[in-house]
Image: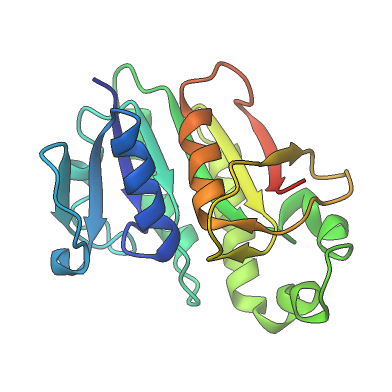
Length: 208
């Protein structure tokens, strides 16, 4: 049975990832500073106390995992520090298959793409949240230069609307798709994990 570890499991997207992964038959390890924040109970769900920024609990989180997803959505610059703690542990794992970093549109090669999304706030986020975007750019660079099989995933605007069952993926230099629900992004991501393609690629995901 494949095992997936999730950082950022207590966020809105993390909750959707847990649900989708369990529905697809995965065993799930979820990191949480406060384990009580994860209300879901399942015999295949293990909630591990810890903190991605300090590295606490990461060894237990990734043990025996074939897949790891970082869905940290903090408005503080913590992701690069978390990558410094996490990536060496992933490099040491046996039979590890894929790490997915859920990044932000406007980082890396998607800077021009982010300027084409709808909504003035969305377009200005890289400026408004300057420290956060600089941190995520550093995190992406750490991922790219690591020895783990990685995929960097950036979504268009996320919503809490009901799932549509539809998602499209484009490269970072193509016109961005429309906004996407968190449930649809979670479905796309979990379905992506055991597919052979998109390793070492940067993807933008949205709705048709």
